[in-house]
Length: 60
Image 1 (cartoon, rainbow, N blue to C red):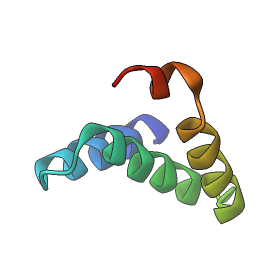
Image 2 (image 1 turned 180 degrees about the vertical axis):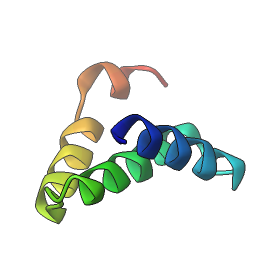
Image 3 (image 1 turned 45 degrees about the horizontal axis):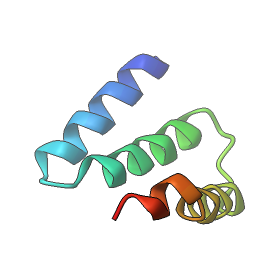
């Protein structure tokens, strides 16, 4: 069941023309919602920590 939610939410978001990074966020949210462990604080914290990565800031 979890593989189906992961696959269909990822492919559905990409079919709508969403960039892959945002499609993975949507996929994670859908998976957390289906497993009943949804917490918006976890999502916000991971997005902020991911954007604060030094190697990602050094790419441009």
